[in-house]
Length: 224
Image (cartoon, rainbow, N blue to C red; front, side):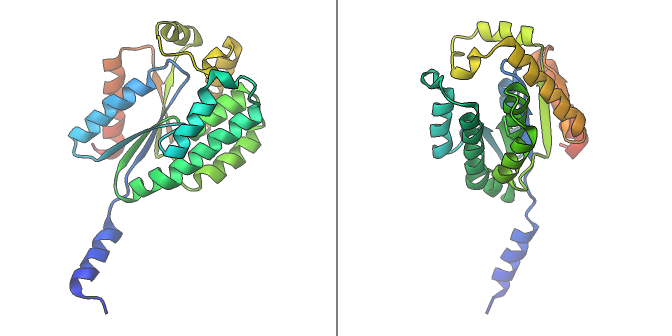
């Protein structure tokens, strides 16, 4: 038989507010990772519990998959293998980390998510988009982003930024300009298809201006 304290605790758990899930997307060099850290600090100052994640990764299994995907020793990897490895890492991250965090009221900020696979493997690699949609559905289930920030930057500007970095030398950094253009165009198609979820950010502007724009987006959408 339940006592009053147990009943009250159950009610509190049922009324617990679900966290928000925000994803940061864009081609490499667009500045999404920098902005994720800045927005995490902003949300924490507003009293929110924040979890920062990256894809692929975020779990022990996911980080092992990440190492395989990015290793320059795996240049022979087929595009189908690449696709399924990304999906596998995502499925683990959703079930092990993201869903429990959201259920506990945590704001989850993720550097890349399902849209990266559609943009890179679908539009970039030109793998069948319907196949990718089915794999994404298996990997994420009902765990879809509440808001996706797309950092839009020209391929030329992104290449200049990447050339200045000493740590950009993984397998996926060796792709052609045409691949990057297809990927960027793919992101634009995704944003057009879901305008209520996507917010397109001009990533050519200063870090401070972009951060202010995102804060405004959050205030307008959530009152934070």
